Each structure stands twice: as structure tokens, then as C-alpha cells.
Image (cartoon, rainbow, N blue to C red; front, side):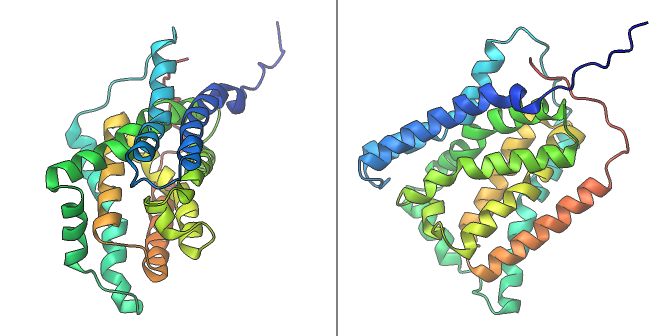
Length: 271
């Protein structure tokens, strides 16, 4: 009888090719954008910024298309995950926006949202850009590939911590591109610190709707879209608002992890 233990799978090796591809593509194009002035008001810089933002999804889809391994299971019916994705995505931002004045922060200004939509050329162009820039550009990579690969070796909490850290670091160059949401916060600020830290509890929320509720990438896209729209339109950028947002996220993530079953089946992923 062979009692030799099977070698422990390395999550670094499993996810390494995806990280090299997604970071290399995104950071490479953003580096060129910075060399050309780094202001997305310039059409060429904006094009580099927008295409570079698609790095995670392009890397994830490319690996899946070139893989001969098993495919992820199909998502469950939308009634199972859609309401949860909307609530978890928008809830923390809405709570922060309306609780901020109670703690001395600025109140929600409806003219801010209308000005943002008008500046994008109207409601439909604004929604189209919001859907692509972030949700579609990233989630086929982060939650469609990296998360299930990490889950072969790590627990939900560890997967969320690792992926949240990677996700946060991927955004770093955006703080240097004038006109981006991240540049508006500034890199060495309390708001930026909150942005980076929030990626960890957010990753727990994404895990919950994509794996526990079996929403897959569609659920991740919807959660990402709802979250981004809430933060941008309700202008949750003050120190007070960001602190409340982060506190709500941490409490929500703790609750979702606490209520998970003791044992969970290992998700099927493409090799």
C-alpha cells in the first residue's frame, strides 16, 4: 500500500500564468498611457486606459479557451442570485451615503449624479460604459478564473484575502492616470487606504454570490455594476462616507463567512 502523501497544490503556480497575463497587459498599456501624458481626457490615453482595463477578463477567457480541462458549472437560475447580487452590491454604498450626514459628512447631492450622467453623454452611454469598465472588463478574470482556481487550494476566507490583495494591487497605476475614479482619491490618502482595504471584504461578497449562490460570472458582473454605480452616483468619497462603507462591508463579509457550511464541495474549474 502506497502511503506517500499527494503533493500539496500550489495556488501560486496555479494562478501565476493568469496574473502574468492580466497584469502584463493592463500595466503595460497603462504605462504607455502615462508616457503619453496620463490624462484620460486625451482620446489616445483614454483608449489605452480602457483597453488596458480589460486585462483580467481577456487573460481569463484566453486561458479558458486554450484549456483542455473541465469547464465551470453553469450558473443557477437568476432568481437564486440576482436579488442578492443587487442588494450586496448596492447596499453598502447606499448605507454609507445616507448615514454620512449623521456623522458630520456631506449629504447626498442629486445634482452630482445628474452631472455625471450628463457628462457621459446621457443615461445609456453612461450605463454602457459603467457595464464595460469594471464588470465585463474584469470579472471573467477575477471571479471567472482566478477565484475558482484559488478555491482548489484555499478556503473561502483565504481565497478572498489573496484575490482581494491581488485585485487591489492591480488598480495601482490608475491612481496615476488623471481623470480616473482612483486618481480623484489620490494615492497617499485615507480614501485610497480604504479603497485598498475594501477589496478584501468585497471579495468575500463576490465569492458568496458567485459560488455559494451559484451565480457565477453573471452575478459578479451585476454586483460589480451595482457597487460602482452606487459609489459614483452617490459620491461616497469623503473620509466619513468611506469609513462607513468599509465598516458595513467588513460586517457583511464576516456575516457571510460565519453562515457558510462547515464543508463545501470543491468547485470545478478549467485547468
